[in-house]
Length: 389
Image (cartoon, rainbow, N blue to C red; front, side, top):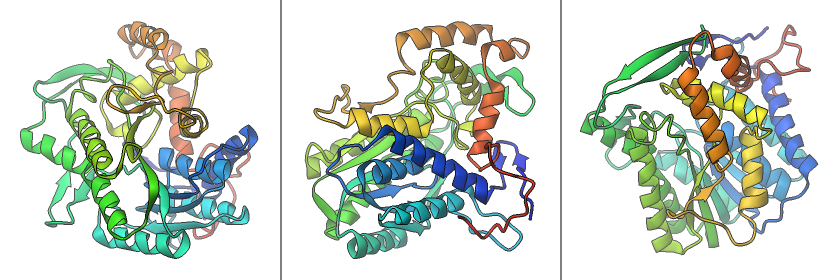
């Protein structure tokens, strides 16, 4: 079949196997060209391994530090006439390349929140790696079913305490408008913490410890985004901020149980993801950030961010902020960049958007998540959606 992008709202419902494989290879090339990354951590578990920062972490540890990995992600398999999810294609492309490089790469596809997937992943770890010395938690999901009581919780991306009015962007039409968002209820805020907070991270560490699958001196990293003051009313000071704050609580609890090196939250920069495109205000900020960081020569996607995390930030004495977080959002949140972003934000309208921001590149980066718009790929070619090279 010939596979084309099908966009519905902020979701792309198709993915291209050749494009996804090409995207994975280019990320691998970025790491390999930069050279080896010193690390004693060679047995890695990546939770949320198939796209974005999770995929980048699997690539960087494997091709930068010769690590063997087990990955976990929730994917849709292909049919004879139906493409798989982009993550399914990414997983297959990564596995093929990791194994060709002599590295172990085992992927578990299922609900990372469930006890069954935890047990399956632990079995794979013990059979293939023995133990893990690094756990990367990069799960992004709007819904979580608590394995203890079977109750399902859905996150609500809303302000907390009071309504918020701000600029927003329709990425399809390019229209800049004003949006008002009512505050979350206490129940919605609590549900968001259940889905996006640190509880599942703690459950993974506890399950791994109980099974004897954690190496002495292990490290776990949980990725978060704190963001700019421009997005704080919806993000950092909203329900998402409450969930992100719970990550700090969980990190402290894991360190108390397993030692000072056992858990750190890692604050990363804003990048284009399917999840972030659903958050009011954030896509508009993203188009602005892309333009400004490119003009300043500081543009980074997920692979550049994670390469810098492992190549620079995790070497030697690791620098931490006051909340024991590792900061890789330092370029985005620098005074110089934020001053320029704030100046442009106040002037953003539908008419000024093309000059002040970069919507075409935002759209391009979004399509690349699904394997579309990559140079060197013949999208007119008939492909089998079940095959990944």
